[in-house]
Length: 130
Image (tube, rainbow, N blue to C red; front, side, top):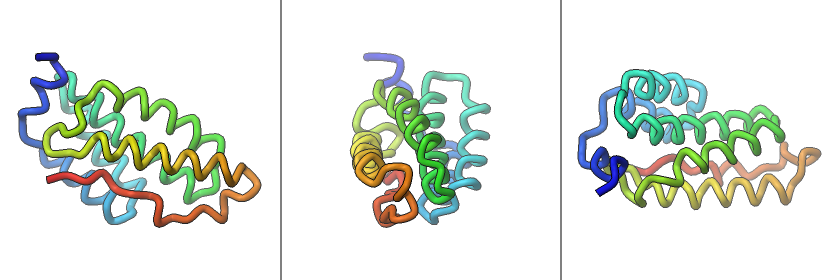
């Protein structure tokens, strides 16, 4: 069993839960702050999972602010942070988040930097968890 899989057995800390709730509410900056606190507090490998989810929040924030280049750069980093994790970790549907982010990136690339204002924000799916 990998270190990633072993750390998936544990419960989510309060700051991670708060970050997920804020992300679901569309409060991307605030979600980033809470998830960053969870990331900084965590000493195990799962900190990279929190880093990936906070990266999703910042990717979404860049989109809402019209920052095409920032959104795509952060999307690429975020996918690297999320890639090692199983589809479900600590109740978070990581596989679904990776797929949702792929959909977001495809739409961004389709629109291009000149049409980012037309981005359909309903595509900004939260990280779902159980």
